[in-house]
Image 1 (cartoon, one colour):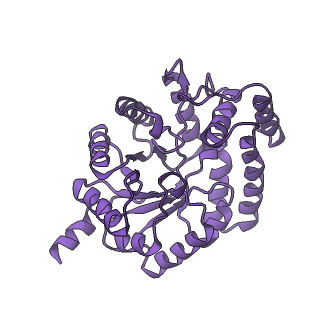
Image 2 (cartoon, rainbow, N blue to C red):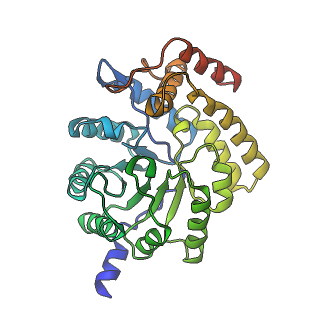
Image 3 (cartoon, rainbow, N blue to C red):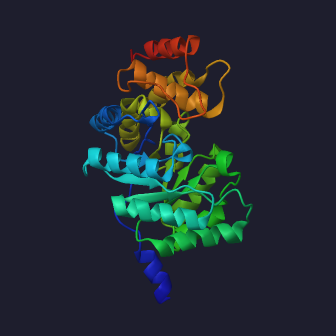
Length: 314
């Protein structure tokens, strides 16, 4: 009983909710473009966001060396300067590597860490449970589970997530599963258990439905481009102004069509479109992508421009 209470007491600091964009990273000549990063973060904070998720999928965590991860996190911490909480992605293939990334995040001074299930070496529920328990034993920081089966090839089961939440192992879930039915079920289980978990949706085109399901906020990649829209939508949800929530979602869905570019797939289309939009908006100096991904060019850039104009951002 004593050890369980000890686990429950760890990582239970201020809860994170609201709009927490997964920070998109500006590059120039293969290096971190710090002036653009500073413009970007300050623009997000001015819009009224509630936190930052640094080193997520949008934050190029999978492309970054350990040194680059540290640089991105340190510069973000410096620029934020305590104005809002920072969640740090500590994503890696297996448990021991994740623990190393947690140590780096602790040294820099973040407010929470976000980890996926282990991947590459195929494992089962028992190993995934133990993975998160080891992370809990390794830090006093709040730990969030990042449910992103498209990248780690495993959907976190709701019963496992709830067990870990009730035990105090997990503080929240960043849901990028795209499984809206599963998210609804998780929200119901969380409510029935007394809300031990903070639930943030990463499904930025159907955030309205997630709010109706009981989400505590959103981690919208598209929020890098239009943070104001997501902040307005969140405020409307808090006020239970569901018509405004829907109208904002319709406009944001129109904006999301920036990713519908030609002959480019996956990361290059999604993050490539976000970076191109930020360049067109004067936030990023370049839409450069990490190697080996090519930046959008030509007609694809014009497509992004037309969508920005259509929704009133340009």
